[in-house]
Structures are given as C-alpha cells and as structure tokens.
View (spheres, rainbow, N blue to C red):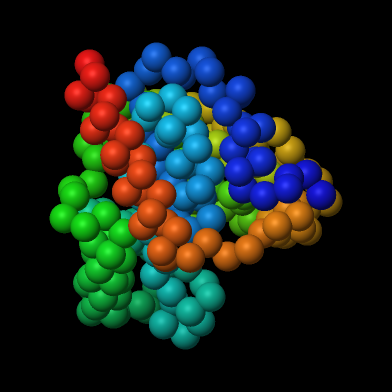
Length: 215
C-alpha cells in the first residue's frame, strides 16, 4: 500500500508540481477518481479545474475492443476494415450526447475551459492500461496547449513508457513493474460519488472567483 486515500495521494503529488505554480495551468481531472486529487492540486496552486470526459468507441462485434474515442468536441477513429461508417457516426453521436449530459450534470451551464496556450495538467488516481488516456491526449493536442503534463500517483511501467512519449512531462512517484490494479495501492479506495464531484467542482469555482476578486 502506498496511499491512505486520494487526499494523501494529492499531498504527495503537490510538491512535484511547484515548478508550475506561476504558470497558466488548467487541471483536467478524470472523473470520478481523479476529481478529488485534481481538486486539491487546483486549490493549492489556484489553478482552473475542468473535467476530462472521454469514452471509447467499441468494436461492433466486441465492445471491449476500442476502435476510437469521443470527447465533448472531438473524436479519434482508428482504421478498422469492414466497420460501416454509419455505425461509427451513430456511436459518435450517442457517446457525445451522453458526455454532454454528464458534463452538464457536474458543471451546469459552464463551457469547457479553453486550453490554447495553457499548460494542461491531466490528473487521475492511477493508470491501468492508459488506452483511454492516450486517446484523450491526442484530442487535447488538437487544442494547441502550451504543454501537456500527466500527473498520477501510481502507474504500471509499460503504460508509463507509452504515455511519456506522448506528453511533455509524466509525473508519477510510483511506477511499478508488478502492477496489480490501481485500488491495490490505496488503503481507502472507495468510489467517488456524483454528489462529491459536484461539491468539489463548486468549491473550486468559488475559490477561483474569490481569487479573481482579490486581484
């Protein structure tokens, strides 16, 4: 075990991010587990925080096989033979509709943060395969950020090596060759509820608004 809970994980990640404290950064937290960690990081450095919402497009014959991914505004589709374009188009529409409903539930009428020329800090409570994250990184790259940084408490070695090649910096205190699942490295890995996500996002928005008023 490496962490008591997600708060403990955030406390151990924060010292590794001081180099960015005066940068124009946006924390993109992956729901739900990444939100508490992203919250504490954003609160510490007075960064904006947003949700990173993506979902894979499953193969029509095996939904576990990803043939692409969809975000709120973009999509990536790999070249697979014999998959009708009609199926892909339908999946993109349905997934994006679902993601927009999810975003509205958590963020209300707020628009996603503009990532152009910003340092984007992607936060989660850990990485397993990293496949969905890789797709998200590709879509973020299309937003012309200044830099992309991935910050996680724990990751398998193989996944970390792949992700490192796709981002400007990969920050992870514990990269393991004998990885056994993210939850194995927390004493308390209880599920983060929708209500907790909404509460943390509201609190970080309040902090941001107070910071703007003071300035």
